[in-house]
Structures are given as C-alpha cells and as structure tokens.
Image (tube, rainbow, N blue to C red; front, top):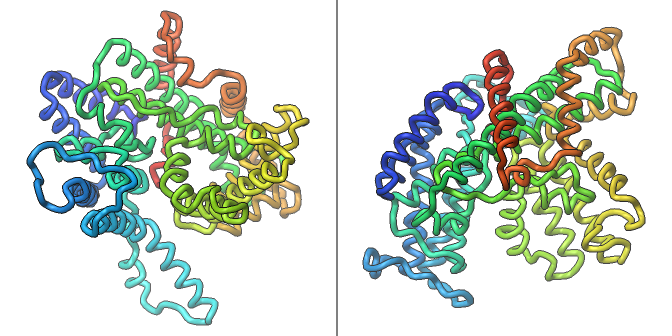
Length: 498
C-alpha cells in the first residue's frame, strides 16, 4: 500500500485515525491498534513479510531487556535501568548486542544481497567459460526483497545500540516497542526514526488541533510533491533512460528530470510520513532541507535524507574513528561509509560507484579543509567563488552520480554518460523522443520542479506557522493532487525498493 493511493487516503487512513482516536484515553490498546493497522499496511502486498518483521522486532526487544537487566536477573521487577556510560559491559550484555546486530544484518544481507552475490557468481563462471546448467534451480535460489527492510532493520538496530551505550532506557512494554518499529507512517521508506527520539513520546505525547492541522498540511504538500512533480518528471526520466538512442540535450533533460523525481518522490514521502505522525501526536525530525541548494557535498549530506546520513555518522563513521585518528584514516572512513551507504541503497555495482563518487568528493572536501584551501563552513570549493557557482558545481556532481543510481546496469550508465557529452552513437529515430518528452504538460512540470527546488522555502519551514491563506493553498493542492491521481497510471515510489 502506498500513501499516494485512493485506497490509503479514503479508506485506510480514515479507519486508522478513527480507531486511534476512539482509544485515545488508553495508551495500551491505542498502541496495539496502531501496530495492527501498521501490519495491515505493511503486509498488504505480501503478508508473509510480516513474520520477518515480527521476528526481527522480537529479537531486538529481548536483546534490549537482556542488556538492561544484565541477563534475566530482576527482569520484570521495576522499570529497566539506564546503563551507565563509560562503564565496561558484561559478557551477557555484549552477547545480547552482538545477537541483535547479527540478526538484523543477516536478514538484511541475505534478502538484499543474495541475488547480487548469485549474479556475480554467474558472471565469474561465464568469465571462466563455465555456466550453471540448471536454469530452474537458479530461479528457485532467487529471493524476493521484503518491503522496507533497509529502513526497519536500521531503526531497530539503533535501539539495541542506544541501550548498550546508555543513551536510552530499554522499553519494558512489548506493545510500545512493537508499535515503535511497525508505525506505518515511516515503516517502508523512512525517515529512520531512532528510539531515543520517540521514547518519551511513546510514554506520553500531546494531541492538539495545531499538530493535526500541520500534519494535514504536510501530508497535502508531500502528496502534491509526489503527484504533481515527481510523477511527471519520473515519466520523462523513464522515457529517456529507456530509449535506445539519445541526443545530448535529451540526455541532460532526462538526468535533470530524474534528479527532480527522486528528490520530490522521497522528500514528498518523508513530508507525508511526518504529517501522518503529527496526526497521531508523534513529532518526527526533518528529513530533507533543500539539498539541491547545498554548496558542497558535505552540506548536501546535511540536507539530504538526514535520518540516514546522521545514522551512518553516529553508528558507523564515529565508531570507525571518525576524524580522530589522523587525515588518512579520516579519508578512508568517509569513503568506506559512503560505499556502504551506496550498498545500503541496493545490491548493484552502480550503487557502489554512486557511493564511491560521494565518498571521494567528501574526502576531497575534507582534504581541502585540512590543507587550508577552504573552511569548515565552505568546504570543497574556493571561498572566493560565489555561492551560486558552488551550488551549481555541487549539483553537477550529484547529477552525474544520479546517472549511476538510475541506470539499469553499469554499461547502461556509461552509455548514458557518453550520450550526455555527445560521444555515444545516435540513431536517426532519436528525434522521435522529443515528441514524447517535450509535451507541454511535461515541460510545465519540469520547470515547476526547478522553481520549487531553488526558489521556494522548504515545506518544513513553510508549515511552521499556518495561516488561513496557507491552509487554503494546502487544500487546493490536495484537491489537485487527488484529481490528478485519479487519472495517472504512473505512480511509483522509488525508495520502496530499498
């Protein structure tokens, strides 16, 4: 089930809100109902994956309690204690954390990277002049990627790690913890909500008209970002990237359209998720902050998918040593984290290259800071350059990297980049592409996406203080989005496959 569907908007969401608010005075049944609705939402396409998520959740819940009580001593007698920082952990506590991490990483590794490993194994056999004789067996070995597994495993792992570090108290109530992991608002495509951010809210939170109104505004604007901008730009990108022959202008047009699609698709989903949370009293952090206005790759990752970039920083980059172990180790850590971030997005060499581009750019920016050629505030480019030039240069790097992110495989990405610089072969039929992608509707959506990207305030900031005209604008955009949604047949969510 997706947010941008009539099934969700007109049936699922009203029923979930009604059931939630009927039970508002009682936390336990309220969270139970929210968890059950979340399982329905998650299992709508394939109910079998609910079992996988329940197993992962149960392992992390027990691991948290075992850490808090140092085994089973005193379990259930009083609230779980907060572990002291800078105190060595016992063998039992270390085993509990390792069990949680291995369980989550094993699930993620198997379902996300098994097919990738199998494909590379076949490629190696082909290089050696061998091949797998039983095609039927090969099909049997293929596994289906569970929806949103990258998001809920990272979210659940953060709980175990935070308990171990003493950053948060373990959750005694299984009902509350299962609710935290399963909340349909951000279950399948983020933002990645850490337990420490919502621990107190799970115990007690306020429900106000202002929260609910802002939640509706965020949902309406997020839906309009998705339907009015991401979908038509996505159609442009798909048409150009799937074309057999592309001229340079069309290739740049398609790449820009994809940059707009992935931004408005993912940012729009995040705004809808935050809005849905507000409708039920939860306050989630901002996940996007105008990333294409960034003047460096360092700034870009402070603005793009903030919940992932901060997760990688706090749970991977800093534990690896961060910038505390010398320049060479800092560059290595940056590159490694971004390579792993690329693999987190998908099991493909294209994602590895995408991560390598970002990792290399981040390391280069840090090098310039260390050599005095830049500053911590203006990394990656000469300080004398105007900000507009630095923004343009940063966006160009991001755009080139998006080609690897979008292309079906590495040869397709290289061919597309060749077309962008007029090196690739162009067939006579390439002129027909313009008749499809330069239609007035697509051009209007494309330019509107550019205007929104670089000139308007963020949805997060714009909805901080709602007024009558703002509320009217939100309702108008909601009405337009719902009307267009009824006629659109192209309505993918990019990050659902991650």
